[in-house]
Length: 249
Image (tube, rainbow, N blue to C red; front, side):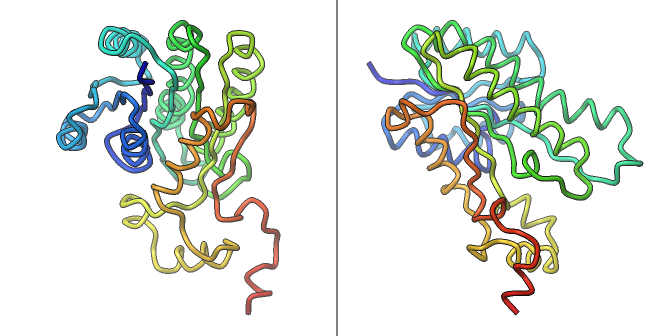
């Protein structure tokens, strides 16, 4: 039977690129996003995909999305928890409303969607791929809520791998470094871009398609013995130490 993947945050960016990769591989694709207008635009040229408007931070929305997936395709082989929000600012200015807004989607959403998907994934032994961030592996300025949420997603991934392995479910995380999304290019100044290039051994931003390739690999049978891992798709950002920009000069 044709395999099925559910991708959250699929209306744009990495999620949309990932949907395209799975469609090219012949999978059934469920595109989930809370932005109705953007999701409609993204799904329009992808008639084979099932588009579901839902908010991963709301249990009732998640349960409905899983039920719609089962009703349409009868199975779920992979779950890509990509939905996330990024809000940056100084720690002393991060109020609890901001903190909860980030955690609701970035952490709670991963927990709720994964938990709801377990029965379907367990039927044939599926895969969970959680999209974390390099900010979950190393601290950075202005990211107290975002970075903490992504670090928690990494720990949640390890818990999933350990506890769900007996069901044949694999769980891994992808931690993107700087990626050339429309949003990033809109908010990154030339100075920020230059600084990132200096800090990246590959000396460039990644692309959405490159992240989609990493996600595809971890969901595919080619990664059938890979679980509990964090793949930093980051151009070497995590590996690089202090002094690299100066050495380049």
